[in-house]
Image 1 (cartoon, rainbow, N blue to C red):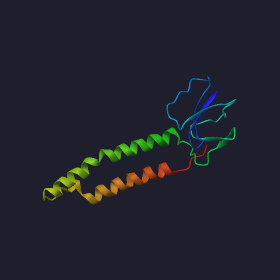
Image 2 (cartoon, one colour):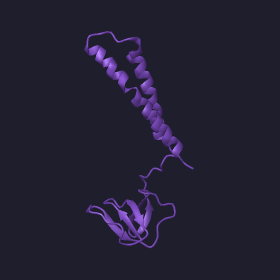
Image 3 (spheres, helix red, strand yellow):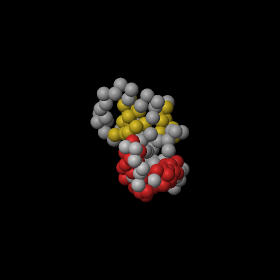
Image 4 (cartoon, rainbow, N blue to C red):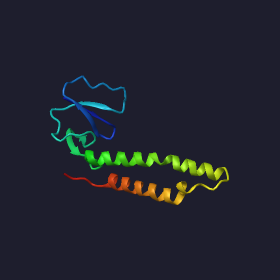
Length: 127
């Protein structure tokens, strides 16, 4: 069994058959090991002095439902980008933007989406 370890000793991946993990990146080491922790996940462990140690910088991945909601909110934010462009187009042309391009309302809605995204991304999830 082999593990792939970066220059900071973070375990990136593993392979059950020796010799299958090739890399051209010289900062990556391939190390033969006897076992892999049962709860292995990329970046969750450091490999130091022939031991697996929990990586203190590792954050558990968010549940699928939360990741889906973040993606949905980001898409909703992206879908309103054109409003900013249209508003700017009116301003640059020296015209008064129609009410549907009220920049304060647009900003409030977009900021609310950003706030929701940030809150979901920053949440600490424990099972």
